[in-house]
Length: 225
Ligand SMILES: N[C@@H](CCC(=O)N[C@@H](CS)C(=O)NCC(=O)O)C(=O)O
Image (tube, rainbow, N blue to C red; front, top):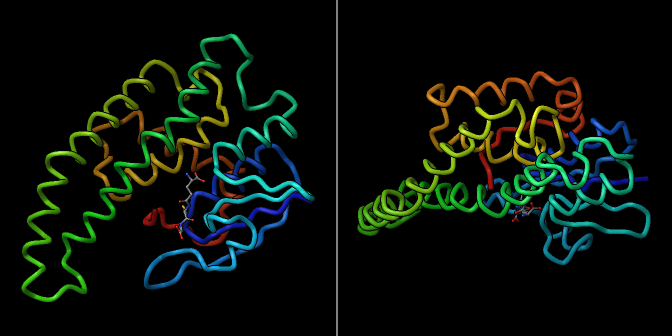
């Protein structure tokens, strides 16, 4: 039996969703973030040394890293579904977005989360808070926000070319891309000025498999790393 080691409000939501799309039975082992630090509990390190989520166990096999989990599930349980045929333009786009989600889209989103927290001055001595605020707003203006804008513009333009990230068919690349797009809508300024991305979010949220995955995983707010 496949077990998804699922941290609340996390990327492992995508793994539940992919399993629902594939119709593969699975169990969910739930872990709660620390309310203050938002970090995963230490018990997750018993499943994988990095103690991050998602991790999937399938009998004696342990797979970590969401992109690797997507590839493992498609290879072993996909029977050719949710991935375009090799050698096609769609397959190249699929591979690009599968890697882009964690390799390029998430780093500036995570930096924004961190510098927003630093800039809030919360928990800092009163004389440090204004300095922290100044540094955070400089880093955001010079580095993080221009990157986020360029990436969102690029994603929007790609969805002008086709309905889904890899082409005309829904694929696992759309599942992998859901987390950064949701995070951008939650906390990085993605709004109605980018109608293709907003319509993509609406389409994925309307999928019954997405809804079933939410019901299995529990409350989900996209506000975390
Ligand atoms: N690139 C990794 C990122 C894994 C990751 O950072 N997971 C977050 C949850 S979304 C986590 O476990 N955070 C809690 C912690 O770092 O303690 C993946 O896609 O699997």
